[in-house]
Image (cartoon, rainbow, N blue to C red):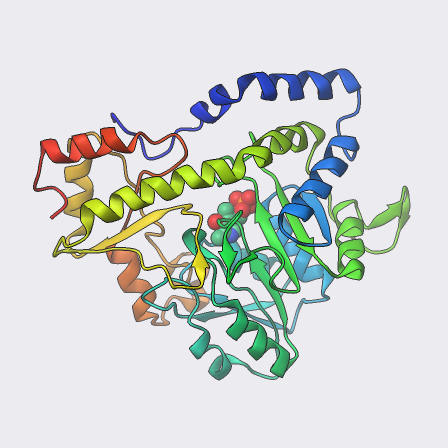
Length: 365
Ligand SMILES: *Cc1c(COP(=O)(O)O)cnc(C)c1O
């Protein structure tokens, strides 16, 4: 591939001196877990998200699991989730012993269709997990209003949305808590797995802090059966470097997205992403829809452009969820069959991508 779908090394190379300095600082400190780098990152990221508290954990999936557990959600409970999302949103619900209740997306934004939520609420419903999919915020005001009326907890899945704004407010502090992922490919990516919970609720923050550390606040004094799920000092130090550059790098993603939109507007066979007036997305992914998706994907591969599909099999059709396999989620299924993610990121050379596309002028029309 001339332009692979995702390349991680350029991020390291651009800030190499700072990452290397962070590495040496941590290695020479002799302290590798639950130390001052984590504390500093947690403070900086909480401020960035306009949230009161941030608790670093081992992954985005764990952030969702610990968030659900902190609110006491477990066996016998139902949690409303988008049917169109990365499987981790569902897995978190399953891992705490609750049942995911899938809701179809809005075909314009690909996010959970808030108009469908109320019909799915039962006496067992305890929570909603809206996902800010592809970097675009879900319609949080409407979701929070429904949650207030029915006394439900809202945990944002902000794994793809670091820095995204909803009506001028930061994602990560719009619900009762939010889960973040620092998987290397995310907008704010570490160099290994990592995640965090943000919240303005100090009792929930306390509970997540206890849960991530075996269920103890004081060593060997266990308040409940917890987890080992910590964001280590090295990753926290790297993330501090990345966080300081996040807005600038999100800006570059925005420029790539604008260039694709310019190029593809008017193309009869392509549906472009839609941005509602109240959203400032951070373009974790740039997803188009095309009827003959597989053919376009191989044509793009022929000209040297790597693409991916987010996501080829909806959670309800996977072997992980046999009890849902017979269910029909037609909007989700049609998106899986037609969606295609073009290369996007702070180091994608969009001029070169366009040059490759124009060499074979009919690929994207
Ligand atoms: C990446 C992602 C997760 C899980 O994060 P990990 O750090 O990979 O565990 C959860 N939800 C969504 C929407 C994601 O994209």
